[in-house]
Image (cartoon, rainbow, N blue to C red; front, side, top):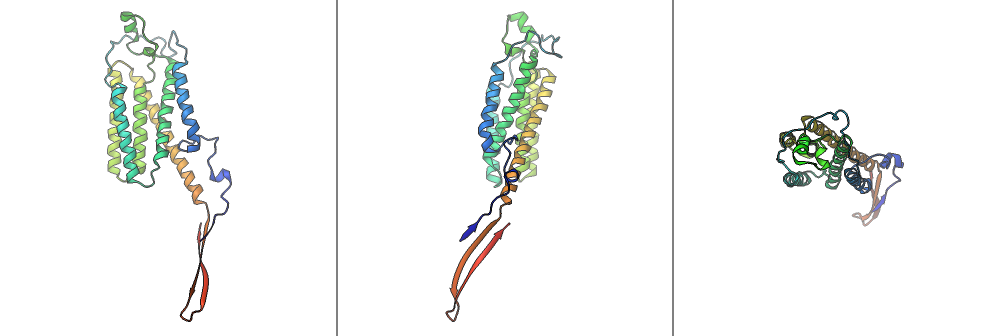
Length: 267
């Protein structure tokens, strides 16, 4: 069999530009994912504490009574990892078009970018937590983290998780009923997580509302960018022209030899 693959289209038509953010593209992910993680760490530790929060939070009094955290990370994280494993594993088994590695990396981008936005906003505004002034007056000095309330990381990550996982279900699940059921439960759980932060006096209502909006927007943007990258790759591969030539020979009833070839052209 002779196979002929002619030259592909020019690079700008068939390959992804390295100047564009392409989550899900492995060649970029090996650089961008560590970079995002490094930025999160740098912002979280290399900041300057402010004596007064930035406007419009500079004149607030945060004197709510401190309460224990209803849903700490030690409780949320195992459920999140288990749910992510079920979603990714189920879609891998149910749909041959589901690119597990690509979507895992895309989801990591959504998580890191959500944390990057959350950390940057917190250390920029340094809004007091609702119980900060109460702790100051009754217990003395507090850690700097007790002052950072805007916006809620619990809310931003909960809604980012719900958005990305629900988008995966709607795109790759073969059951609309299952997709809608999952999305309802996922967003309900995210809303519950966000509401506990207000009830715990750890955040103001505006903190969780903005956090939910930001987390949803980032996850949706990353997911649809991952899908665009996937489609671009498929288009590039489908533009290839493949020519297959299979020679053959046989003898007819009179022992006359015949020679020929089977030619297959895929465009």
